[in-house]
Length: 216
Image (cartoon, rainbow, N blue to C red; front, side, top):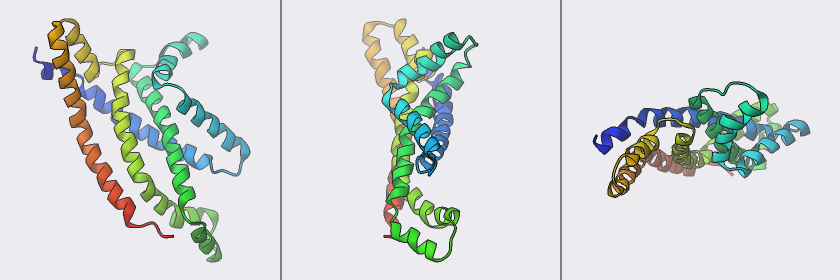
C-alpha cells in the first residue's frame, strides 16, 4: 500500500483529537486562569494544585494514568480511548494555557481598572468591558503556539491504541523493510507539518492583532 494512502487512514483521528482537545484545553484555561485570580483561597489553591500537577508531570504518564491506572485503582471500566486522549491532552495544555490567561489579565494596566471603578462599574463590568477584551488580544499568540503544541501532542495517543497518523505509520513500518522506515517517518513528518501550516498562519495573524491595541 502507498505510504500516503496508509497514513491518510489516521488523519481523521488526529484531526478530531486536535479539535476536541484544543477546545477542551481553552475551556480549562479560562476556568483555571480566572479561578487563580479568585479572592477565595480554597478555589485559588485548589486550581493551583491542578495547574502544577499537570504542568509538572509528563503527558505520556497522564495518558497511561487515565487509561490504565485509574480503572485499576478504582475498579471501573476504562473510558473509550478517544475520550481519554481528549481529556488528558485537554487537561495538560489547559494547565499551561491557564497561566497565559492569568498573566494576560494581570498585564492590563491597573490604572484602567481604577478608571472603570471611578465610573461606577461593577467588578463584572470592569472585567467584561475593560480588562478582558485587552487580555484576550494578548493571549491570542500564545493560544496559537499552544495549539500547534497540541497538534504535536496528539501523536502520543497512538500509545493507547488510537489509530492516528503515527499509529498507521508504525503499523506500516512493522511490515516494511528497514530502508522503508525512514521514508515512512519522513512522510508522517510532512503530514504533521501540513496540518500545522494553517495554525502557523493563524498564529502570525494573532500576533498582528495582539500588537494593535492594548491601552496603557
